[in-house]
Length: 128
Image 1 (tube, rainbow, N blue to C red):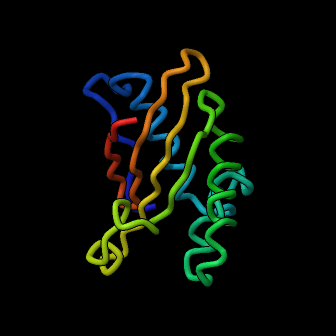
Image 2 (cartoon, rainbow, N blue to C red):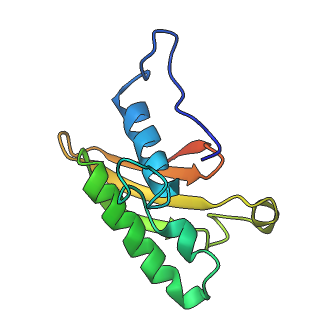
Image 3 (tube, one colour):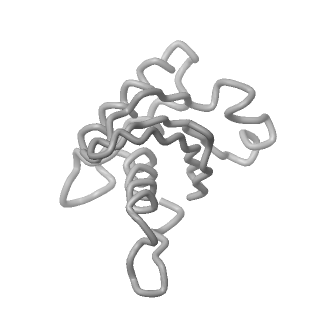
């Protein structure tokens, strides 16, 4: 991965949502086998990116399965992967930026959250 975990000055995440967002970003952009001691950890998204467009559904299923397996604090409601003009632009594709738009519900409170995750570590808050 090309980015690390971002922590506040006291060595912790600022709040629960920051912690969940960073965990999801790491899950989505980690390829299974990348972690030596947990080879199943991660998502097959990056392995599917160069496949023909009809593999997009497989990529979406991979994201949902990985997030629901490794981030039990959320329930995934929807996923979009760099296919709609409102999700990703040609200029970002040329730079190698992968974007995943994810909407999830916090299991504990039912709060619905939408985020745009990028493989360069940028997480953008969206209106739910």
